Image 1: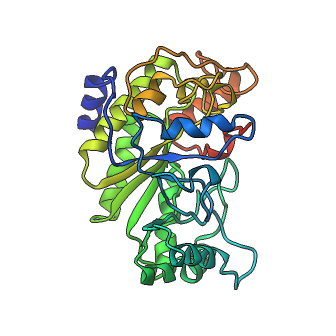
Image 2: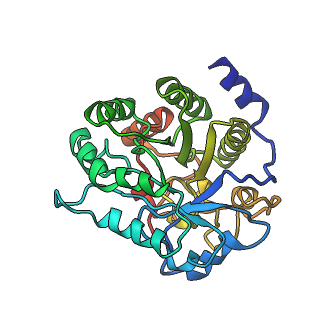
Length: 313
């Protein structure tokens, strides 16, 4: 914890104009701004992979260099449903380069983007839909729980209910860097020897300087940890539709790369400042009132499941 605090103090303003083969993209195309699809593929970007919470790739990226990582978001309604397994198997047989799949999205939460399924149901679904893919050479990602304290308990219960073998542990975080470092350390201690993917992370609702400091410090740290093999920043949208705060977005309200967006793609600072439309996102000063206090505390603990709060437009 002291080491994490030291890093946070030492590196808050380091400009991340570097690239990394670990960097990926969380992306769901915007029907209002289809031109934004091209941003993530334009040089100097060398992003290597992406996921979209679905089993099939996004049309805009089908012929791109980005490797697609399918995800089984939640449990299907039928107890014999194998749609995910069938879809991924068909893609592999047709020549698609699928080396990894992701398990359930925030199954410990039934709101805020969580799939809300029990460890027992997740175990049964995993055995039927995900485990058989190992025979095809696919590496399997464990369910990605929220940053809440109950998230890791859900994951422990899942493994207790299942003879499931995961190759890596994904995690989500929306709080401070110190909290992120602590969560990564806890996951590493609980499942030693397993690689870690940080598949959602951002500092939500903070000021621009603080947000950039979190971003730079986190990336520098991830790139030095050999067991953090993949990461994807939560910000591939315009600032005026961001419900993690405009400052976390990688695009301005006009679709231009912010400093964070450009740094993530390996470029230099742009000077483009993100702005909110006032209807969504959180202002520079953060939320107000008693609900604002609850939100700030939750963010500090990394308790949020934020992905559904991303207002696609």
